[in-house]
Amino acid sequence: MARLRGFRSLAQAITLGFLVRATIAQSCTGTASSGLPATCGASQSGNIGTYTDACGSNYTIFCSSDSQPGPVGTATALTIQACMQACDGYSGCVAAVLQGSTCSFKTQLTTISTAANSIVLVKYAPNPAYPSPVPAASYVNASTGCGSALPAGLSPYGQSVRYSIISPADGLNRTYLVKIPQYYSANAASPLILAFPGHGSSAAAIEQLTGLSGSSYNSYGIVVYVDPYGPPGGFESDPDYAPGGIESSVNDISFVKNLIANMTASFCIDTGAIMATGHDNGGGLVNVLACDPVTSISIAVFAPNSAAVYSGILSSTNPNVFTMRPLGTPVQGNCTPGRNNVPIIEFHGTNDNSIPYLGSITQASYALPAIPHWVQAWSVRQGYGNASISTNIATTVQGDSVTMFQFGGNSGALGIVTHYQLGNWTHNWPNPGIDNTAPINAGLLAMNYMYTFTNYTRTPVFNPPNSTVGVLPTASPTSSTTSSSSTSSSSTSSSSTSSSSTSSSSISTSVSTSSGSSATSGTGSSLSTSNVIHYRDHECDRHYISKQYFHQPDWDTHNDYYYDNYSNFFSPYDRYD
Image 1 (cartoon, one colour):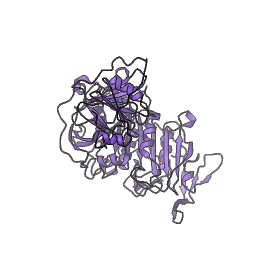
Image 2 (cartoon, helix red, strand yellow; image 1 turned 45 degrees about the vertical axis):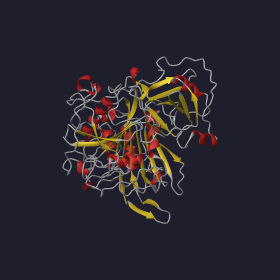
Image 3 (cartoon, one colour; image 1 turned 120 degrees about the horizontal axis):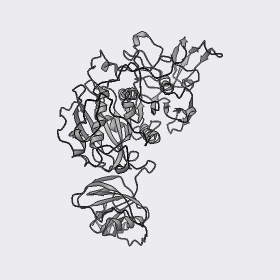
Image 4 (cartoon, helix red, strand yellow; image 1 turned 180 degrees about the horizontal axis):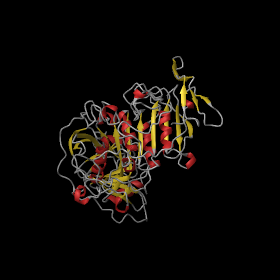
């Protein structure tokens, strides 16, 4: 009999008013899925697919599994189909567990775990707002890893597992955590999310910050949390990792290309639904990847937070952070994405002292553009113009303000470039689950954005013509997620599933970084500034810019414009050289 967790006995459950054994009168005349098995085979485990019962309800079947919390009632059922129909007939049932001839009903579902001789039937996912993964058999963007069993140590909604690979481009050992979502199936193409932490941080830290391992808003996506290389622990969006820097040997662009190839060969991935997100220096790497001709195509959506978007302009040249051309990065002379419809969303606090909202030429050897100017440049670069629509976003944090700026409306692509201006927020990932002063939930908004701007008919490109590196074999776990070290020395396993072998896959990756391509952005008219003075009104805790004038002699009217606070930065008059 299925266990009633939380009760010492069945009698106690009855005494407390819980229905333990029910007679379900459910007569359905529909046709169940033709492949629906009567029960699980002895060798079957994990997600074996989604099936429709005779009542028309869809259930995802997990063999050799159990779920939490405990049941609220039971009924007799001899087959999976009978248990599905029994759940349909029980008010509020969202899942059931079939153990022997006992079908236990669940009105809540929080976790799924491995358990012998037990089958979990899930009626619907916790977040029905997101589409279920597309069946791999008939989907053009299903990766070569579809149909492969999960590597040892990984299970749906199980603990994140640390892996280690040697990056072919630079020979460096790189580590990362892999989290399998609650509803993963080897036969349905899951989204892939790459998450990059800040400077000196770790994969384990960004996992906790983002909340992307939770099923409440990521039921389907595999998440890869990448450790920065170090110490000091950074990515090549950091000036120290640029040519001439102390860590210039690191080649993150090629590493990410190989990582994507590894993941798509080892797991069932939707290659048209890959998102890159990151915080601080990791957010800067997201910008670098969006600027690369290859990764800007292979990755569908980009979602940095508090992004350290260092330009390719030296601070020593004293550039104007409000008008400079933020077209390059420390490792890219120009930002040259391989397409013009790159969806990018960025979250940034106005009180960010690490990566100042208004830019800086004193943080490092390369200049940081003002964030509003950088966001607008992304819109102009892609041909969407510089006009935006601003919307005040509700927040429960007293005294804070959140404004969303969306570009692309003039071209029928409103939001293709989006920025959240977080009033009074500092240099942190906003997650109300771990910080009740967070004005928004960036992880949830990033997931919403990914599903909104993922084009399921877009066929991405992984390999440039001069590709020389084949698919990496499946990586081997080195330790659990409890370790935050980024210096694991374990090498990549030589064993792999048949679907991830080099000979069976057409995916390959380049070992070279991209540079030297011509810029694709438009260029505005000359713009100059004068008399820039910053001060803070401590009583109101607001940051102002006093007497900041933008002079544009080529315009017919309005030679001088005055911006008095953050809210006016997205003005029709804001241009870059």
